Amino acid sequence: MNRNSIRTKVKVATCCVAGAIVLSGSSFVSEAAVTAGASNFAAVVAGTPVEKTDTATGAALSLAEYLTEKANAPVATPQPEVQDKAEEAPVVKSEFADIGVSNVSEDSYINIRSEATTESEIVGKLYAKSAVTVLGTEGEWYKIHSGNCEGYIKMEYIITGDEEQAKAISTRVAKVNTDNLNIRDDMSTEGAVLGQVSTGDRLIVIEELEGWVEVATDEGEGYVSAEYVTCHNYFKVAESREEEEARLAREAEARRAREAEQAAQNTRSSSNSGSYNSSSDTGAAKSYNPPSGGSGQSVADYAVQFVGNPYVYGGTSLTNGADCSGFVMSVYGAFGVGLPHSSSALRGVGYEVGQDAMQPGDIVCYSGHVGIYIGGGNIVHASTPSSGIKISTAFYKSILSVRRIF
Image (cartoon, rainbow, N blue to C red):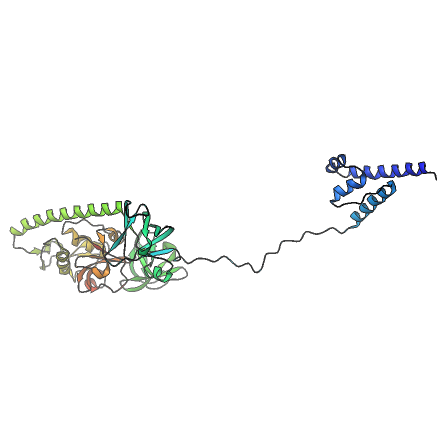
C-alpha cells in the first residue's frame, strides 16, 4: 500500500471518530470549535492531558484508546454524606443564665439611666431582689432591660453569672387563663373543691405533674388542671419613671379621699354615741368601732374587729361574709380608699415594701390570696369557708408582694 492511500484511510477514520464526538452533545460542539486537533479536543472534554504526536496514526490511536477506556471505566456512585457522629447536640441554656440580680440593700434602689453616665436622665428605679436582662456593656456600665425599663446601671449594682441567686429571687407561678377554675384536693375532677380562682390570678407552684399542677392554697396543697394555667417564673422588675409617677398620683388621691372621709367620720361621730351597730347586716347586737385615723395601724385595728365573721366566696360584707379580696376591699373602703375586688389586682395597688419592713395595715399578697398585716408577724384575713375571718401568721405560705397604702 502506498503512502497516499494510507493517509487517505487515516483521514477517513479520523473524520468518522471526530464526527461521532460532535454528535455526542451540543455542549461539546463549542469546545471543538476552539480546539486544534481531535486529540486535544478529547483532552478538553475529559479534563485530562493527551500527549501530542506528529503522526496522524498516533493521534488517532491515542483518541481511540481514550474513548475505549472511558467507555469501559466503572461509573462512580455518589456516596451520601455521613454526619459526624462526634457532633454534639446544641447546649440548652438555663432560663436563669441571662438573669442579673440587683445588688442593693432592702428598702433601697438604684437609678436606671438613659445613658452610661450619672449625668444622663433617670428612666426608672431598680429595687432590692429585682431581676434584669443584661443586653451589653459600656465601660463600667451594664445596659439592661427590666419590666418597662431599658437603660444603664453601673456594674457594681448588678450580680451576673449567679444562676442560684437568680433562681432564689424567682417564684414559680401558675397564671390562670379561665374563670371559676376549681382548686381540688387531688388530681381528679372528682376531688373536693378547696376554692376557685379566675383569669389573671396567680398560684404558687409546688410541682408540675402530668395534666395537673400542684399549688399552694389556704387549706394546704391543692391541684388545678394544667390545661387552664400557664406556668412561668415570676421576677420582681424595675419601676419606670412613668409608672412611679402614676403610683404617686394614686397615693395622693387616696390620701385626699382618706382626709375627706375622716372629716365626715368625725362629723358623724360627734352626733352619735361613737359606736357602730351591725344589726342592719346581721340582726345581731355586736357593735363595731367606726374607722378612725388615717394610718396603717388604724386600718389594722378596724379590721381585727371582724374576726369570727363568715367567709363567703365573692362576698364583700364585713359582717355577713366576705372572701379574701372582698374583706381587704371593704376594710379599706371604710377609710375612703377604693380597691379592686381581686387578689391578683391588689398586687398592683399602693407601693411595694419589703417583707422585713411590713407595718400594720400593709396588704400581704399570696398566690390567689390576700390579707392585712396587723403586726407581730400576723395577718387578719378572710381565710376559708370553714374558718371564716381569722388571724394567722403572715408567713404561713410564700409571700408574693407586700403593698402599702398609708
